[in-house]
Length: 321
Image (cartoon, rainbow, N blue to C red):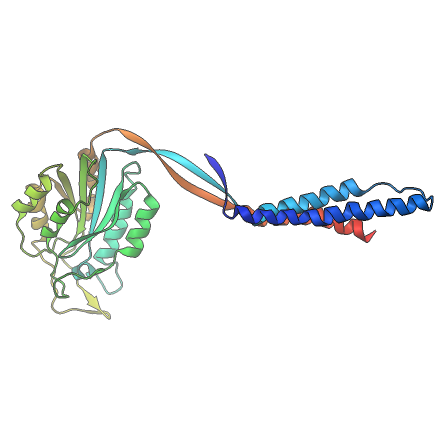
């Protein structure tokens, strides 16, 4: 659907200033006609209509440009009315680990994987949150893929915001995921709720059974873990590895334990297609609603001013004769 709006409609009244030269044109022409009649001179070809049309055209185009017209195009697309997904990205310092000083970090990979996985569900509202020793929302579930990408790329960073505990690599706790339920990260009308967690799984001790109970109660949340981890990775500072960090070999088992307790699933980085299949299965099928979104907007002001130069040039040529 195409719509036309004016940002400053009252400014369009500037076009009325064109009445001044229009009145002057006919006043001077009328006086000249009376003088020629008194002197018994032949009347020349009347050029006033063409000049008047040119003046009106210039005034109208300038007035429209001053009103700042904008043409916008909106598209309607179907969106799930009963399902939402929340992507949670681990932002603890251990997510700085990489296979080398210049290699992509776990966080870099997690963000890229989140964007790829989100593209698999264009008709489902998806949100973004970060996790350290607490889980905080950055974008509540919605169908805007651009907003999702911008949030992941610009808002998600290591310890941004910082954890409540002291700054160190080992602050992550999967118990923080209970906030997704207790603090209302999902809409009340969402019957199918899926939590996708991108983490290295290097967590402090937590109660897996308790986490599963909280996630399943009420309008249950199904969880899918994506294990972003490699045993040979280190955390580098200024190109040198931090001596206090070692990759936790128990991380994969911890995620599997949490997934089992919550009746969810856990996958490695190479299992992203399988993760997408699991999420799709948890979402099932449901009713769709039509959602409108603005796709493009074009300001017409500059083009109207450019068009106004044509009748203005015509007037100038007439005056030069």
